[in-house]
Image (cartoon, rainbow, N blue to C red; front, side, top):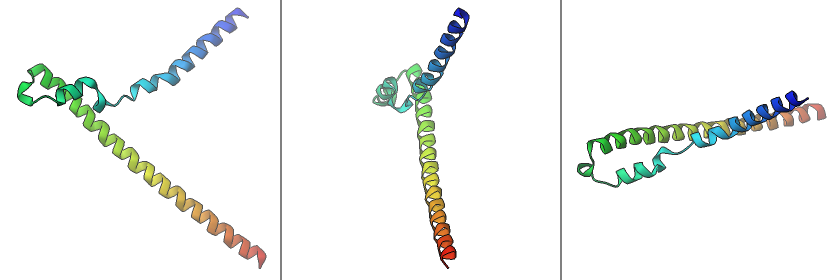
Length: 102
């Protein structure tokens, strides 16, 4: 009985950990405080190390923006497809009513 309770606690902990872990992974690299600080400086004011960090963070920001635009486009396409499907369902329902009523 004690072993089952312990096992259930471990499973519950694992589920909680798995469901909260992705939240931290979704940080926006474009809002990173270090990136914003480095972005505010002139290029000739940056040390080589700062410039390397800036390049890496700028690349991550650009990739995140591209990914975000792609997701927005896909969401828009899905909404259009869903609307078209509902139109077909309504037309099919109306045709069915007409055929059954005749």
